[in-house]
Image (cartoon, rainbow, N blue to C red; front, side):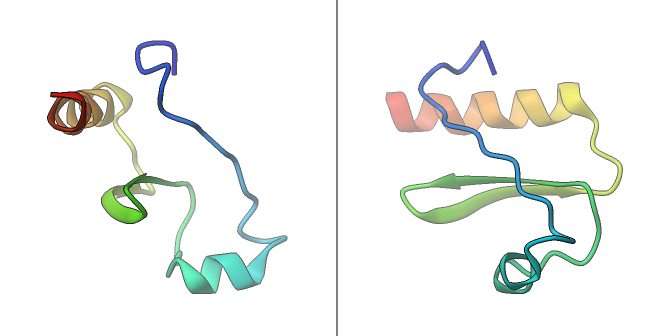
Length: 66
């Protein structure tokens, strides 16, 4: 995500890594999860509206860099 260069991203296939899906309680795909300081702070699943997700990330990001 170019707008948030200090946020690291990763992609995992929940069907191939079933233990991860279980650990994160992923019941549907796709799912986007944002962690901050090791805690889940945002989760969007199935129908993800990218612009809304970006706005939510922006608000959270501003709180952590302030």
